[in-house]
Image (cartoon, rainbow, N blue to C red):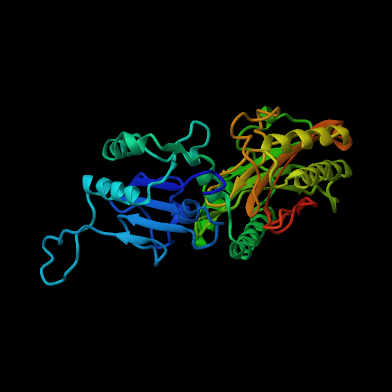
Length: 408
């Protein structure tokens, strides 16, 4: 809060219209806001002009629960109707919540009140128009004049991951790799019979059987010697000699993965993919190395993109970079490093900066002419999840693919 100049941060939301920052604030046992929940955070150290500590921030929930003691939960002073003998108080409701919020603010007299409003970042734009209207009317001009778009505060809070989560994320990666290896094997593929759509639904069914979720529909596509994508079609039968590519992800305990891997269907007498295809994958690996080396806290996505593309050209690699944060959301909070269709930088969303303890999905592709395919250009899309540690150094969450999966 001190980094972003916010004395008091107010986050109001209603049931089933939760702010994107909601999942970063609440316990896993809480699935939705309670009628209306207003989370209030006040920096007592900033108010007293003292250095920040772990005990600086007051956490108050107007509506909802204490989230296991994390918040001071405020309830109504009215006894609950139809609650004879139980002694419970009614929950805050309607305009009463706004009046309690006003009292909380008046007691603390903040200079700056942060609200989640942004024209750039969806993660920082969770304050709905109705809630803003109701809050502004209740607080009056004095306090409404102190509203400031928090923008960077929710963005970085959502992006930041705990060290304890890294071991769990590694296990998720191991599961994804295991599933992908099985999908890209003779266990799931019979050349000349299996279609790419069969693998898509194999993935969906297998993930479901394991009790896991996914945040997007998986995809599988083919590159084939002597044929264009249009000639291959949208749902081809897989043949010997094909290069297969998948884009898959799983969701576990609110965390998400996003990976793209490649396989080669061996032809008669083949024991490995042609050298040209192996070289094409190596070019994608080199581009991965470049991006990983350029990711550092304090740099914007656009700065990382420009530096990476400069080195890519020096290395004579024909490629593109479109990496994104990942974590509580698949396309997570934080700086974009390019988009597949915007390689000169992304205004706004690419200007955010990398912070320590955030996760990244390193997504890119390298295109290489393959001699064994008559010089045909072959794309090697790669996507692997990485961790920017508390020390600021980037490393793979598990590993990256440097050999094509082989389907016999």
